[in-house]
Image (cartoon, rainbow, N blue to C red):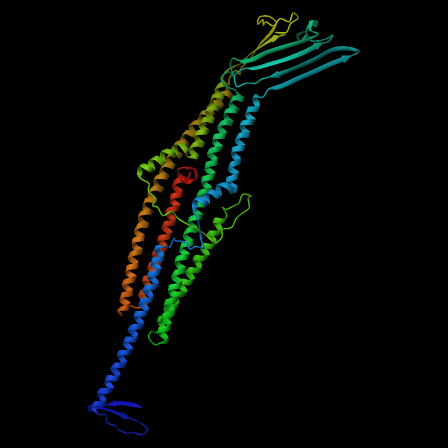
Length: 527
């Protein structure tokens, strides 16, 4: 069929059987009215579908915006797992935490071993000789020594010596049946008067206990820092997954609506392709986020153990949470933290203990420059004597001796002292450098925290601005001045902004944990 038109009216022409029919002006008016009504109806239907699509997007995305505001509100089926609960479980049951507790016991045993040098000691000697039916000699000597932290060692003992060929210096009168009791002391007047190896060992053991305490704090803080990093990675992955999970729901609804419009002939096929691509992209991002959420949860589980040293798994019913109150630290607070770090930082404490250990070694090395001069004095058979007189006579019945020795050049002793002094100087340099590095690390970490906190606030404002842009684009779509492509662009920007905001929150918490670790604070500031 061919449709033609004349200046007087419409003509209906059939090419098979050409018949010309003239339409009256009244009929022409009726036809125009019908056509205009149909076009008007189609326009109303298009506008209706457009309004429905716009309202649908507005309702769904507006709900998503409200959910972003309440993103951290957990459902009833999920229980919060705070960083404090995490730390508590680690300190109670983690193998490394239990290993650090062994350091305390090691230090106790070290002190116990050093104190063993002051244990009373029993000594005994028995020597006899018989030859050719003769008793050449029989020597029996027993004593108890009492080492003390003072520079003298008391000793008491008894001896019984007899024989035909006994050494005269061991001769004892038969008045007491060849028996003799003695009591006395050995007093160093030169080397060993100020300090000696036994007292140095005890002091070193006590300092070793202080060093193990500092090492224990260092190991625990390192463990908690690594745990905090994994915890906040888990935090970021969990809420990022929740955010992307909602974006999938919105993208799927948009695709479904556009597909319905296409079936009614109100949308182009390319619009459905674009909506489906967006939906598929959201699904891929959701799957990647879920994988990250699973893996970060596994890494967090490596820090979880029960009281029987059995590893625990992190169930899906637990979710990380963040304290809503803002973190505030002024410059004065930073200075106070730095002052505490100079005193309590485990690295500085260990170096301070090392300096004191070297000072103990220096005093011992200086002591060896003195000559060895020992005075030995023993009372014999007092207060026991044949008359059983209990009075002491210091100038009668005694044995007195002096021991003296000294190297001529003292090269070994002087070299030992010089080496110790060099080690002290080297440790002092290391202490100054370490303290400087700690303070600088604190300042730089604080600056990063302040900067991240500012960026977090700016990023939150950007999210609000992106929400306004999306709402404006939805309004333009309702008025026929926008399309699905522009809507997707604004949605993508909003999702990226929200994802970045979550990452910034994660980085902020990591830096906060690192700040307290850099200050050497026990349990990263959560004592």
